[in-house]
Image 1 (cartoon, rainbow, N blue to C red):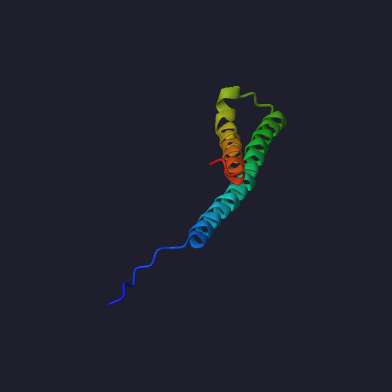
Image 2 (cartoon, one colour):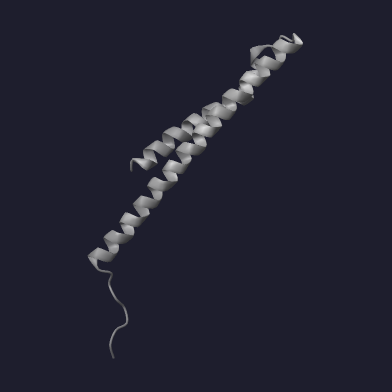
Amino acid sequence: MASTNTVPTTAQTSGAQHGAGLGKKIKGSVDVIHGAGEVLRGNAESAADAFGDAITGKSRPVAETQPATDNVAQKGAREVESGLDAARGRK
């Protein structure tokens, strides 16, 4: 009786590895784009808050308005760095 178990060839294995590496690079590129959007959003929200405060004459402490928007921008920046590493094959 013949065995039905087959061992993948080197070409099959390296092809699967190449495909997985390509997938990580594509995901990394998408993460870079998303992270850049988050940086823009965080900075835009911060600018809008400051502009609104200037129009209304409010003077809120910086600590009251910036942490949430800065947090968005910082997370976005970290996502960009992580995405770049993945796109370059370092992750």
